[in-house]
Image 1 (cartoon, rainbow, N blue to C red):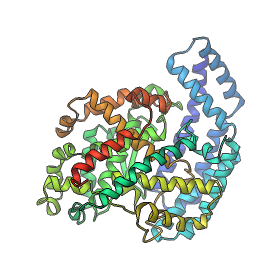
Image 2 (cartoon, helix red, strand yellow; image 1 turned 45 degrees about the horizontal axis):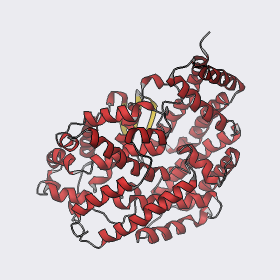
Image 3 (cartoon, rainbow, N blue to C red; image 1 turned 120 degrees about the vertical axis):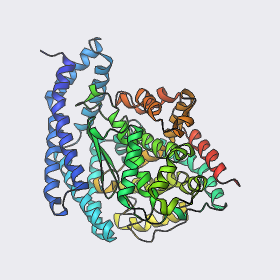
Image 4 (tube, one colour; image 1 turned 180 degrees about the horizontal axis):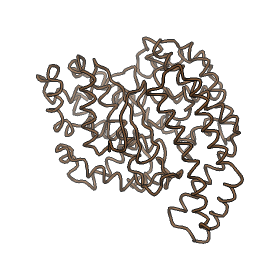
Amino acid sequence: MPAPVDALRDALAPIEDLKSAAAVLSWDQETFMPDGAAEARAQQIATLKTMAHERFVTDEIGALLDKAETAVEQGAATDMQADLVRVVRRDYDRARKLPSDLVSALSQAASRGQTAWKQARTNDDFNHFAPHLEELVDLTIQKAEALGYETERYDALLDEYEPGLPTSAVVDTFADLREQLVPLVDAIADQPAPNDAMLHGAFPVDQQKAFGEAVITDFGYDFDCGRQDISAHPFTTSFDVTDVRLTTRFDAQFLPSGLFSTLHEAGHGLYEQGIAPELARTPLAEGASLGIHESQSRFYENVIGRSRPFWQHYYPALQDTFSDALRNVALDDFYRAINRSEPSLIRVEADEVTYNLHIMLRFELERALVQEDLAVQDLPAAWNDRMDEYLGITPDSDANGVLQDVHWSFGAIGYFPTYALGTLMSAQIANAMRKDLSDFDAQIAEGEFAPVLNWLRTHIHQYGRRLDAPDLLEQATGQSLQADAWLGSMRDKYGAIYPGL
């Protein structure tokens, strides 16, 4: 008879397989599935997710978990097994609070919502998406009430993505960040902006795709265990460490769109490919939190991908690829152009300085939706008002405004704050890495990325969910979450790009 923790793991493995199968169907829905299959796919995914949920919340799993906890208490478990039991207990207690019919209803609404969102965004028609969003918000409120919370509903939702982090902590962090960030944004706005005309032109998509894939291969992304496709909104999904898939999108007239989304998603993919293989088919084989996950994508997109050493290495190849647009553009001009900071409509294309203001806007709006302080029908106007307040611009369409992000269409409410949290973490991680890799910039300038990836594998990737996000960040960087490292890096970088600051 297998030991208690092994017995629990054996029972969990097929549940993880069901979740992975549902994820494959979701990936296909966003990449290759014909729109006409939306309703059938919603039912298929709901069936798999409901099966996984129902198998997980059984008394049998509970009994196995009780025995495994006893084994841990008696010292009859490895550290990894103890971590597994701790994480499964948290997930189990949370999942037991959710009725199966609610899990199924949320899954179906999310599948239908994603298809409706794609159509609404393509046609700039918020009214087409609004009924789906209303249903998703209502079901999300039911979910929050079922899970329970101490202070406000949003706590229950945020906890899914950042375990243990209360909404009040996000509010305080964002308030402190905004106090220092807005003056920096204003000061940059008073300076002459770098010319970025060279980034607009003719950039054939097949050449963009080939260049991006060559770069992320150099980063260490393993195409034997992954692939890259195109979707309406870039994302990364993992079915196993041996099957981690990226998506991106390209704009044939604007180079940074596809380039930096490719680097961004590669950061997510490298994290998933770096999780220790022995965690496969367990709940530990995921990122510690979405904030930690986002720290990896922002690290590769911005800390590396928008740095001068990176382009010292890759700019000649980029000039060869797009010679008509770039052959007469100096490296320094290109570097300043890709780091130009100014308010913009699209979050995923926002510069480093203004990006977090996009996140604060979304956090406040979805929190208001959940608290029933904002109706879905009033969302476009509220979005436009906050864009004007925070960034001084107003969207020219709902497609470039309230419809631009996919997250609400699949019920991911509580997700958005993790983008800003991860951005802050990426700077802390970079500072810690530079202390260990004294020749960090020189290695990047030579296109040597193995030391960077090895550092991340050692300090972050391998652990999966074995460590909670605050503990993992503290262990890797010697600091708890704070904004000082990121704000300092922005002042240094943009002080050089905008000498008048």
